[in-house]
Every structure is written in C-alpha cells, then in structure tokens.
Image (tube, rainbow, N blue to C red; front, top):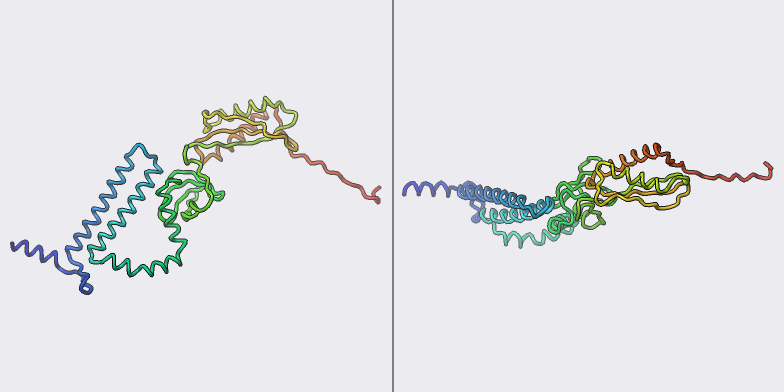
Length: 281
C-alpha cells in the first residue's frame, strides 16, 4: 500500500504548471511517451501492411501510405494535446478568425496543401510516374503535402508546388501503362528507293536496344519535303524517362546504315535569284 502511494506521488509530481488548467506531471510525460510509441508502431504496421499488398503498384502504395500516415499523425496530435490539458474545441474556436486572416494571406500555400491531398487521393500522379509539366519532363520521386520532388532528365532534383500538377495541363507518360510511343524522323534524297528506305529504318529500329518488339515498330512515308522525302519510324519503349538516349543511338545507327546502303540524306537546298539593275546591264 505504501509502495502504491509512493508511485502515485511520483506520477503526480508536477514538472510544469501553468495556471489552473495546465499541469504537466510525470504521468503526463509517461502518457506522452506511450502515445508517441503507439503512433510510431501504428505507422510501421500500416506501412508494412500496405507495401505487402500485391494488388497495388508502388505509386498507389506510396500515396495510400502517405495519406493514412497524415491522418494518424493528426489524430495522434489531437490526442496528445488533449492529454496535455488543452481543450481543442476552445483552441479551434478562438483561432478561427486568425485562420481566416492567415488563409487570405497564404492562399497559394493552402492551395498547395489541398492539391497535395488531391494527388494522394486520386492517384492521377504517382511516385515513379514520368510526367511533362509545361515542357519539363521529369520523374516523380516524392509527393508531399505542399511540394512534389521530381528528377529531371539532366539529373537535377526539383521541388514543384503541388498546384502546378493540379492546375496546369500535364502529360503523364506512364499513367495507365509503363510504355509509350516515340518517333524518329529523317529525310532522304528524292532518288532513293522508298521501299528500301522503309525496310532499313524498321530493321534498324527493331535491332535497337530498349525498343519493344510488341507493339511492333513501323515506318511512315510522311511527306514530300522541300529537298527530301520525309520518313518517320515509330516505336514503343518502357524506359520513358531515358528515351532520348535511345533516340540518339537510333539516329546514329540509321545514319551509318544509310551510308552502307547508299541512301543519301540531302543538305537543304535553296535557289537564289539575283536581279540585275539597269546599270549592271
């Protein structure tokens, strides 16, 4: 009985007291530590359970885990504040006017937060997606509440405000499938054998490393140019983010193969008319 009384005295020992409502005791410290440990353990279980699922791809797993994590943290924060003696209803009611004033001054910031929640919920943009935002092609690495971390093709990390991904036009190259179609164009001399040109372009493209064989690459005779016949080879590739390297190598191989086959790539030609004046005549 005496030991129990001593334990109660220790737990009720006041460490910090502010007014009549806030009394920070040893018991409060213990409850705070337990709440933090429970929150961390719960976050671990949720993450482990989500990433173990085989039905979701990595992008959806990341979005779902982040969304649940934010919800758990908010609930845990409210629980801790209540445990410390703060009345959340009074705090929210008293700060409502302040929040409205701050919100008017920080509309862009709150817009980024809302956009972050939208991205996590609807999964229109996910981690590892390759996107094109206003001409900037990049790979999504992290989606946070305010910003999204992306990696550009020149290997630079950038933080994009989430509103740029929800308000602007955006191309998601890997939204539904992991591959996308690309093209490489070339012009050849008017004296060239059209069938031979198309066969060579397709053969070189099929042999190119990184080009998918299904769907099968194909060649189109696109147009009669000013000084050349215009052809384009179309192909599919899974490495969307590094496709420019594949296209560069394909152009390299096409150029060498055209030389071997005697297919000329003409220089642009211009006809200049010089009108003589009366003095020159």
